[in-house]
Length: 468
Image 1 (cartoon, rainbow, N blue to C red):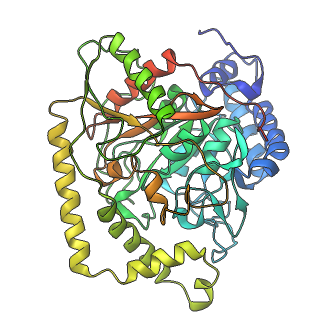
Image 2 (cartoon, rainbow, N blue to C red; image 1 turned 90 degrees about the vertical axis):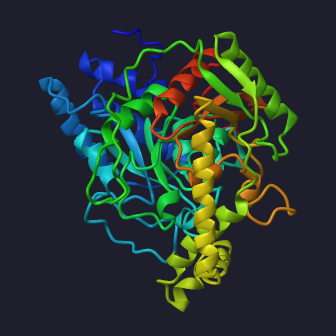
């Protein structure tokens, strides 16, 4: 058994909690009550959760406790406090999607992710906050307000999985479901100083389908890489409700030994050839890559060779927004976030030929990246060009019109459906900086192994309470 380094429940990982459940030193009920108490105290400050049901959570925790007492846990994450983003259905909880237009009633069926988590015995604490329908890279909405960065509550958490990232940063729950159609896992993970991975498209089923369809991936956000891998073991399984759920990984996600980096071919592109990056961010990412090189990785400073695909991405993104608003009455449209309504209206005017040309360019980009990975096992970039900015605004400055303009490293790899993750690599002026690691489709474990090395080389600081 590995030595338990932490003695405070609020600091523990899923791996540590599982060991303590096994030896009956802790029970899932104790851990759930600890999480609920901290959520009650801290959530009014950061707005990580949009909905928590104490009775719902404790009922699941008691059942888990009974399984551990009998020595019959359902999985390694049985009893681990977890959250689900409020764009994903959980039977018995509401799903508001951050929108005043949503139904307040309780959902009657689990989405595949929620079902797999429950089948594994995870204890669901509640739903984490999202911008309306997950439409932007920060987290605020008219229904529940602004989600704030725990490192500085004047700043944004990022989004759209901002609630999940904040909950992970403060350990308000251990395992957190997120989704990413343009950076929505990696953006808040970077801003909040936690680990988040967008696995290869199709590994985790998504039903009902996202409005952004084949741009959207589901994945975990956690404090540690291995905790996310335990979560992947539970949820990365085929589900026939998702027509795109066609991929499986033959190996286990968790429990893999650290593999040496000697001979691994890494391309490092600090700007992708066109991004203006904060010098402090670049300094930290440069240092992280040098440490990988010192471990034997073969590193080339090279760009993947594509131009900024934002116009292509925007065409597909705006069309997805148009699909959402097309189902709403004029009265409901008046309740929408004005920014979301604006891009939905713009999407309504996209010509079908324009849309299909964007789809063709997307295929060309995917082919280009597949060719790139015949030479390189992984591509590394900063997760974001800057640290977190002021909460309550969609862009860093008035010069930017859309959120995509300040997150140029993320959306290209939704277009290509590759695995991409963000791992903390240090802090700049007290704010986290993330390193993005991208691998070829299906080669997620390559990126994960590199992330584990970064985790060892550059251990992260974590918070117990938000900083004002």
